[in-house]
Amino acid sequence: MHDWFGRRYLDLLGSIYIYNEYRGYTALDRVLEAVRARWPDDGVLIARIEQHRADERKHYLMFRRWFERRGQMPLSVDRTCGHIDRFVGIMFRSTIDDLEPQQIVGRDALFERLCRVISLTEKRGHKQVEILLRHPLVEGDARLMKIFRVIEQDEPSHWAPYDDWLHSHGCREPRWWERAIDSFIHGELLFLKLPILFLNPRLGRRTAWPDEREVARPIAHARALAST
Ligand SMILES: [Fe+2]
Ligand SMILES: [Fe+2]
Image (cartoon, rainbow, N blue to C red; front, side):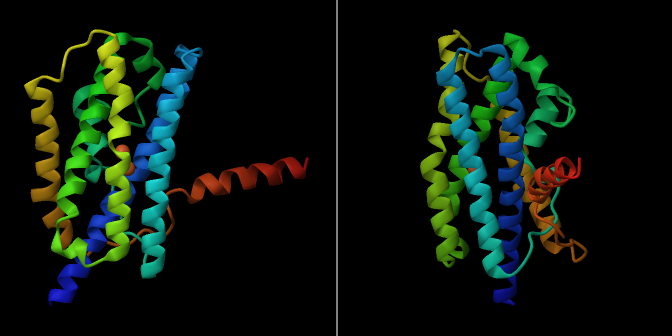
């Protein structure tokens, strides 16, 4: 029973993380595209967001390898478990996929809001990782501990570019209600969604890796070119 509990907990934790890491770097791809279009000469900002994107992709791959070693696919959790999905949904009243980054980045007030959402999400992520590094179930898994230690190191450089942009543009600090929304989303995930998923026997596993389509696309494209 204890073994089942522990395995299920880590399974679910890894599944929520791999979803969020994938969501993170793919959403940053779209932000980057818009930032490059608006501030093509701001090489520093572009390079910092590129580094952030590269780190999230690296985190995604670490979790993918962790699942591969376990010989299991991640549980199929969706955007209801995505912190950034919920945060963007509340702050912009839109899903990430429906959001037009060009429009957000094109208006200072909206980009300011986006910077705050990303910064608060990253700070939340850092706090959560520190808690997990002291969690007895996580401590029992050496590979997972290694992953969380890497994330703990990377996270401060993730919120810095957005905080620096806010400071250099004379923007205000996050208000209490923005912090409250962030805490609410985290609490909802931890105390409502996680227990429901934990106990849901019908929660299936993914049949493909989230980034498999990305790999398939260039190959299909190359084939199409070769046949012309
Ligand atoms: Fe990450
Ligand atoms: Fe991060």
